[in-house]
Image (cartoon, rainbow, N blue to C red; front, side, top):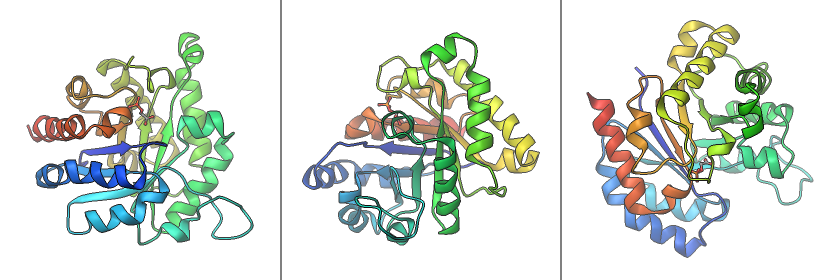
Length: 253
Ligand code: PGA
């Protein structure tokens, strides 16, 4: 039984004051929703303030990135050791990290291994670009991202994969539910070859890319899709709460 999961990725948005306000706006309602795991991923600088706000709630904390080394001369970076005890999840290999910061599958793999070693739950993001999609290369790209990203990673239920087609991120042009479910099924097959069938069945796989309160139902009603990684809509309290509420209602039946 895979527990549905909704993750809000705030990206490089919100000052500490704004982040705190946003949590205040949604926390009471989010906290009451049962049957869905809820995770907020604010910018690093707001993590400690938000940890305090979430401490007696059912809402969990994640981060959007981290370095793979425990410490050292890596100016500006944040290590897994610094995150332990503050957050539970860490988004890794997001397409914006791959695209703007040169993260390769090899770098992502090091980060995944480091997160797991430190008891953090990685959310590995995979997804194809528009031209790759149009050239029919989606499965090839995703298989590479999974196989290399999870190289030497022992089967574990303590991680999550998010399928985020790059052409759907921040564009308002979401994939449709059936397309997303088909690719997620492919991801689970790839995983069952890399790990084994049981481990692949236990792992949660999310859809991400222009998810809103208006289209979440289309994704979450697909049995293959275990939840969503939400960017823009997670910055609006009403929308994010509605996404979690609809997920709880649809997955309950
Ligand atoms: P979006 O972002 O919901 O704004 O498209 C999703 C993501 O990048 O995680």
